[in-house]
Length: 510
Image (cartoon, rainbow, N blue to C red; front, side, top):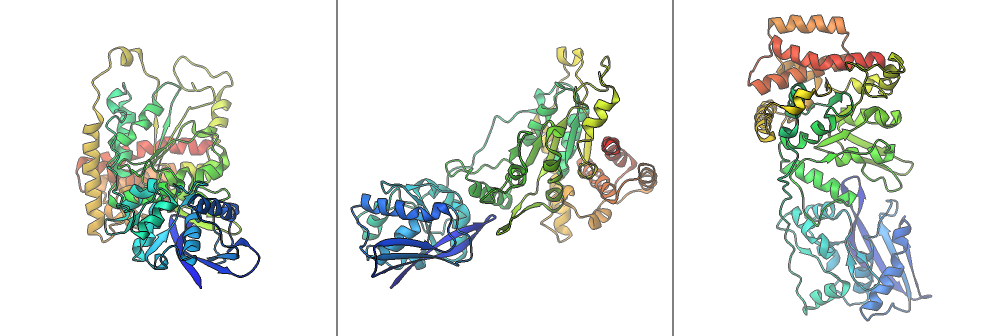
């Protein structure tokens, strides 16, 4: 007889079913695990043996073979401990064989028989729901698994002994409940920013249409403060976006006690981050910062200080909305629909172009520093705004600034207009102008006569690429949506082009 238990292996954010087959046969005592298992899975034999001993059981004095099928699918991680132990106990007659047909099992075993939390429980729960099965997972992962739905049968034992007692009827495991949403009431507020009205306007436009944004200015001008306040004016995640974000966080092991946040992710990696850390990779092809910022914001401070190779690796995710990690034996795709916000100084000394400051190295300092950013990457940034140093008057007697809640309401109304527009066009998967494909933006961004002439003149003089041309239209469409107007006027287009001028100057340097 062969005991069969279902568990999962991960490929991107997808949990693929794995059949754990356990057989006890005559032969020399020992346990062998086959099926393309990594080091963590191979070490399961020691943890399983110790956990059984802690429960007062001993390993059979026979040959134990564990097969993880399909055999050509790589198996990684410690979550195979519990399904192997459960399969072994089914084969020994200590647990009912129906477990394999009714449940997906995952969990790491401690030497004392406890079941430790593992990553990827939410994708596993979604796979269990799709297969019309329940889920057996660690106790601390139960609230996370409960987000998969109220109909799924979830058992979240704290130890192997508790699981055995549950099936024997001497102990009852109550189903876990999903935790409350994480709601942050203390997000940084735009009212804290003194002056910088032009930069605040650009931030509002970027938030309304999900456009990429670049701040350029001297140290201390408030670039990082502005970027950190973008989440306070963005609308919360909807149900579909929340699920996608939670799946990625679960795979990366970044969920907080089974709770999920309705706020959009805001990731700010250090400029020393490697390419694998940024776009994903490593031995287990884990998601990188770009995927962890899915449906949220990726903020890159000190933009030119990042490795040029790391920066150019962002070009494909910015276009396609996904990160593809290709290895000799792995090909994994993670969603990565992000809003890129970057901040940089105009030169290495930071004060180029500021009144009263003269760069010691002259214009070459500015040219060399800005040339670290490639033209193709700059072409994908919709808005570029100069953030000048604050004057003494701005600091001493600042004008009253709008709080984030007022700006967030305007952003919400503009996004509602965009969502309704694309739903009526039969493409509800598109929610913002920043996601609108090039062949469609020309239909939804209808220009009046004066705006058409202006766009033609600017395109010829600035020699806009096809991508830049369509991105100008997207920004203009967003500005019109903020004003609640159907057609694009010359004023909307002029403002959109003004945000593009900085990009073109930088691209000429690069």
